[in-house]
Length: 268
Length: 270
Image (tube, rainbow over all chains, first blue to last red; front, side, top):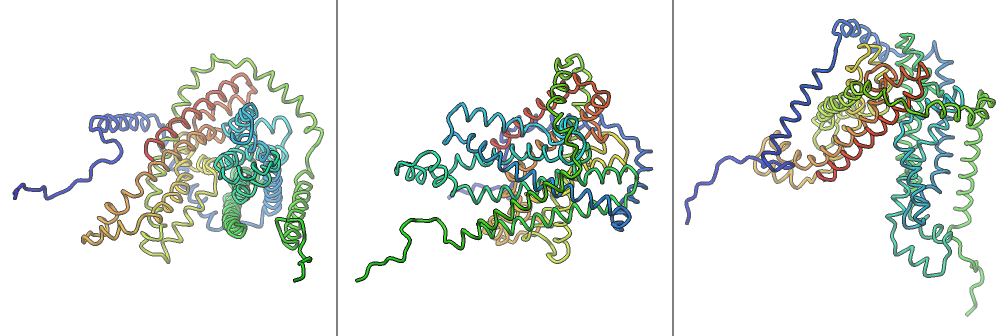
């Protein structure tokens, strides 16, 4: 019997970067970066202290929201946002289905695959706001530019996820349908579509939710919707109206989130 | 034996009733779409819409040769943008961790009071875009990088908090029980039973959010919250389209690089 003494305490070994030197270098690097980054922030503390009083007023406005005095503007903005959300999601889904099928490597020939994937990449790389700036410059102020922005953004999101989903389908089912002598259209209709449909519906509902949230933002650059109303309210320092608008946005997003999760459970 | 004749000879996917429901559903959706379309376009000036291709060509021709000599001026704003994203992510994650532990069903100290509050914080932070947070914060604490950092941090709480509390709820209960069986205190259970299980998810979520925050911080300047967006706004205001092209290319490059970094790091962790 060995009477080797075991250590009485135990330290958890490092889990991610196991090399001691690398760990040290990483820690020093992070520290240096933090010092440099924090050092480059210029804070005007006087302005902040003045602002805190304003912040207090905003919090008060949030706690006592004023729905009535600007109700006409809020109502108009909401209608614009909601209609924009629905139409852009429908159009976006309709366009992204063929692009998604084209971007699935197991269904489309190589040249179509590359075209569709590059459309997706462009749509995903550009921010909604930046697209909105350009579309407002081209199509004029108002919800139509917002509708186009959201439709374009929907394509990148939905077509990519749909294409990834189609690439992951059960090949056995596709082969069974192919073995009956089915054409390409019949293959898509009877082997692919039943497998991806539940997910497509789920993703569309999720995108509806995202599009509403985005519609509240693109109004800031003039693309219509509740964002424009909110921007005006904040510019005029009407924090009670701004608080009301934010509460409405939060409420609608919550309803949309619970509604879409309920609908998805119901459909699947 | 009589032959069964009342079955239809052709196969159909759905029963007639289900088909009827499906068609009614689609018809309702189309009707809703048309109605929304008419409401939305009631005030649209179609002359502007038909004029759009000409406008696009005009803007395109103005944007075209990009003014590359503008690039050096953009390096400091780019550094600011990276700082807004990184510091904002760090601050957001620090605030999100306690919220996530309060919101997870298996770690919350009080399911009646604290959990609903934590869930409300998460929903409120998630439903308000960082640009709107920035709009508010610029009005409150003044324009500058600080407003951007706080806006990114506030927006990140909801995202990180939600994903993290789901990860906490999905932890393996047997490991926690094993640690509890050794007589560990509550903090020891947290540190040896739960934290090691959620660590990969935590780093994955944080890096993922950092990647999103880089994207979002590039435009925060549009409302005055510092970074490269300020330059974009300034160039747009004076219609300096060649500068806009340079800025957009730089933003695109930054986003691509950050996405690549985040994908690499996440693959290394998970």
